[in-house]
Length: 258
Image 1 (cartoon, rainbow, N blue to C red):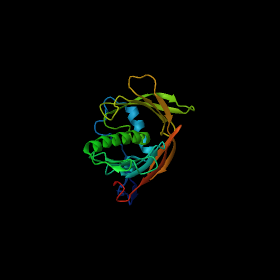
Image 2 (image 1 turned 135 degrees about the horizontal axis):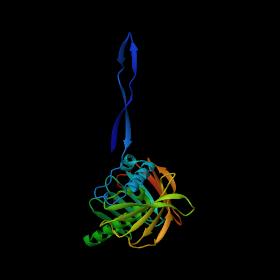
Image 3 (image 1 turned 120 degrees about the horizontal axis):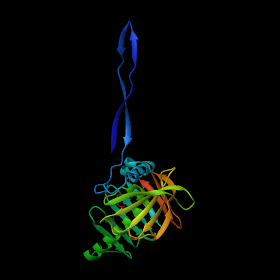
Image 4 (image 1 turned 120 degrees about the vertical axis):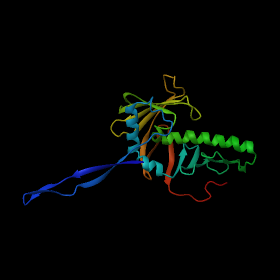
């Protein structure tokens, strides 16, 4: 979405034959991109400064329009599995390992799935439901590790500004706190999200299993940003890497078939 501001650039006055005449006012259109929160984002409990920084992160990652228009993303999660996600249709394909023996296909909008285990297409409704739910949980986890900076104003999220802090390596960073209420597989999680004060990109996060915990379970960098399509993505999480990242406009028609 965009807010259109009409700004009068100039109004030139001149005099001729003793009469004051005014030229036509010229107008130019200045486009200001905005980043509306998802429905259900807890804006009342969130801090205005934290929201402002989240909007700047979105802009520096490519902008809301670029994120919304990004259609297909592929990536490999820590060498364990490969994912293909059509953001527009909701289709997700997860392939475990190098072979095509174990593939989960689900749609995050309809929650319908197709499952292949050990090379065998599953036909029992209970098995399909079980592994479809598992596929959605895998997608929720793996997508968050890659796309979190785009999701700082998600539904049921609360965003707080904590302080200026330094991350590992000494870079000054804005420290935000991200908590949730009644959404996802683990709504009790908490994150500290660090945003470089110069680049205004996320450069580190700390994960807490419970929002009551005082110490994080782990802290990892967000490094190695590169442009994919019209957006920036980071794949470096320290000891682990998200690799084979691609942004595409189309896929073979049978991509989400087994």
